[in-house]
Image 1 (cartoon, helix red, strand yellow):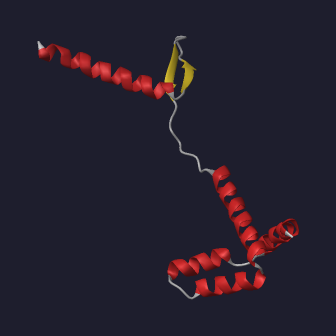
Image 2 (tube, helix red, strand yellow; image 1 turned 180 degrees about the horizontal axis):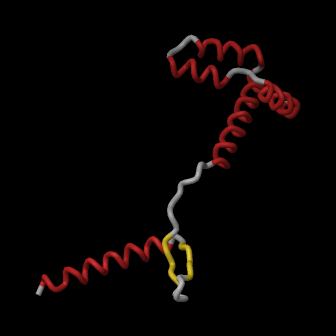
Image 3 (tube, one colour; image 1 turned 180 degrees about the vertical axis):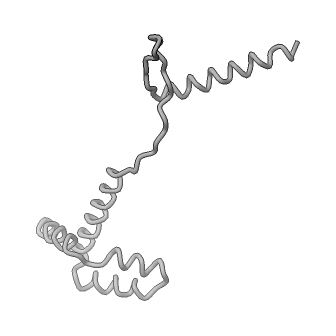
Length: 114
């Protein structure tokens, strides 16, 4: 009796799995005999471009705020001391170095802070 349910259970698992994939979206096509067939959409992960741009903008804003609040001389000293550390410290110093975008943002923020 248990043997009789094996094909049914296997088919039921296939149906449930297909239903779960179709719940995430599907592509409808019409076959040559007029039957409408829905196939699950293939998952293609996209590069999170919006998130990366937001991360870069927030990073520049952080650097600009830090530069405006501490001052250019103290900021340069801190970055220089960071550059003397380990590999991760040097990578952080490279990221935190003063660049034109940071100077522009610090200029706007220092006017607001004063």
